[in-house]
Image 1 (cartoon, one colour):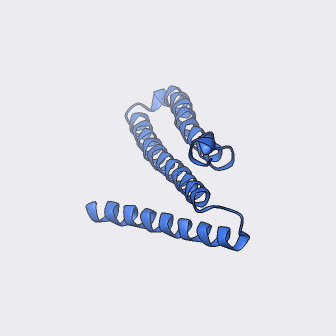
Image 2 (spheres, rainbow, N blue to C red):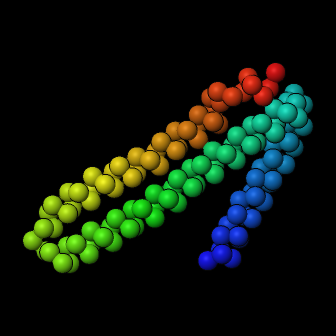
Image 3 (cartoon, one colour):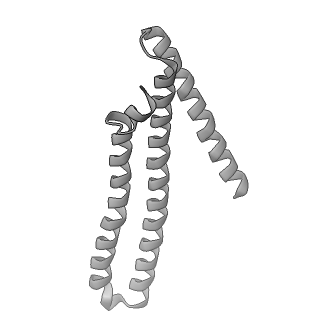
Length: 121
């Protein structure tokens, strides 16, 4: 498990470096962006990707655990399946909303970054 985590973190780091390099190259081709603005927007994209990815990972694990426990409950008490199903669907909707919130924050970081004026003069 530790090797898997290390590989995932290194892959994210390498993807971030590749993204920064590609953004710098694209800005150089455009000829109008400064180095600071390119770095800022490249890291904003990286932060958005990490945020949405981690949110999706956590929510996926949570949904899997909730579904497993609901199936366990139905197996123990089949007569309570309707109640368990209703609570499960409500719980899954709340868990999924957390991923949607992370996606909205990621889109704000990419397209309407409120910190742009602080870092780029």
